[in-house]
Length: 121
Image (cartoon, rainbow, N blue to C red; front, side, top):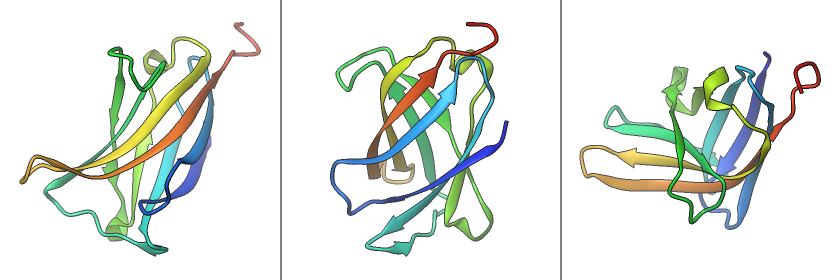
């Protein structure tokens, strides 16, 4: 499946992104992370995760760990078919975690829409 790309800016409040995928697909998502309009570098001690759940309050959370790209200004997430089993609208967040300090450095909220597969239903 083709790669989707978007930019998030850590200084923007509210919903920063809308991501649409299909049930059972394996899309790759490339996210450029900015702060005040400038790309940030992802340190070796930092991990970036994309999490999603039926709502912000849900305890049923799916988590994907990203892979930092060349130049470290972006991170790539690859969904598996198993990580997209049902259609619906989900709360989502991208979190940059500093493992050395055990703190969340960045959090950007968004919406993940998982569409029904037109072939399998």
